[in-house]
Amino acid sequence: MIILSFPYLNNDFIIQTAKKYPNYWKEFRLDYSKDFQLIPSEIIDEKAILTIRSKNEGGKHKVDIPEKIKFYKEMISKTNCLCDLEINEIKDNNFSSIPQNNLILSYHDFADKIDFIKLEEIVTRSNSLASKFLKIAINISKYSDLIKISELISKSNKPVIFAGMGKLGKISRILFRHLGAFSTFVGIPNNQTANGQLTLEEAELYKLSSISQKTQIGGIIGGEQVEQSLGIKSYNDLFKKEELDAVYLPFVSGDIEDIWSWINYSNITFYGFSITMPFKRVIGAKKDLSAVNLFLPKSDEMINTDLIAFQKSIEILIINKEESVLIIGSGATSETALKAFKSFYNVAITSRNELAGKKIAEKNKIKFIQLELLKNRKFSVIINCTSLGIRNEDIIELFDLTLPTKVIDLPYKQKNTLLITRCIENEIDYIDGNRFWILQAKIQQHKFVSAICDLEG
Image 1 (cartoon, rainbow, N blue to C red):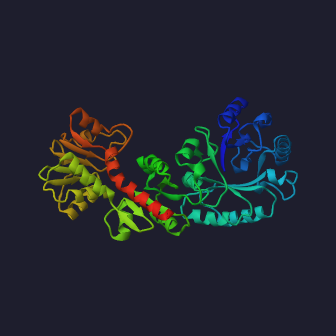
Image 2 (cartoon, rainbow, N blue to C red):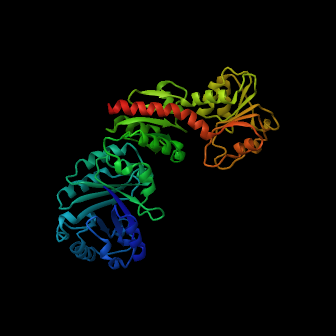
């Protein structure tokens, strides 16, 4: 069950919003207004949830429990709606006038670290109380905590409405059924009622309503930039077209061991992951590889599809072995580029991280050029393996470079980078970040679809 949550700002807003989304279960956050009693009962029905959140658990205005219960009773008698009461703020006998089938007992914890002992106590107490649902809303910052959350949800004797918040709020809501929960909340743009709440657009992108415990999970692992990955729309569109029960998600992480533990020990069926900065080397090292950008859990296969994309780029741009090549960057992708250009005679590398750049140059027996020595140097080919360009940086101007005759520019964005704009203006042959991504994604598409079909049997 997907619940659309929105604030009670005024009657006009709430009436128009309710009309706009007739097919959703709806949560009306009445604590957003001191005049919550004025909500028109004609827009409330058995698929509505009335919530007057306590200020102690994130509410906007203070309302005493007796007043709240009295209002809930009146609305239930008129509309047969559901009502939300905080389990921490009720005594076992002061809510008995609310019918069990109309009651949600809720628990909210905004602490950065989950108190699993307290959470287990809440589930145990809920099991002894009469209500239709238990709602759990907690901040999640570790993927490995999702395993413990799933175990606790399984101990509830009533369906759980789960609302993850914080750093992993969105991903945990997308996976609510995999965690064993019955329902979660989504919000409307610019009017979300919780931190980490999915918007309707995101819910539609990830096919949230059709995700089940059998849906295979995969996506892209990396830093915050993965939320802008071209793969999110591309792969999900592909899976929809091929009628595959799978979804491709952005897994933002700052701790590779945390997400790696979750992948290895959870009961979720994972078909595969794209790997990006800063984890290409770290994950590759698990199999004594220099860098990888694709991991297939079932076959335990790791591949570097960037290498194939570089090789295809060389063919497309007709780069010959005698041309001078400058690689900019000192990350895993720069090393992959060097592998593709291994047989070329005149390759150099430069980077802002001089120590890392020199280390790569020494390892690959090529020349390292300090940034200050690049001024007016002429190279036939420039390969940008950094993120420079995403925020409109001009690499040519920044490093005092002379325009080359060919360019491979890896950053991708909706508009051209300034380097690609220069290429277009000066009729320079180029591979931009979007095209490079497509070149490597073709292999990943094939691998993902094969893995999904194998797992489906």
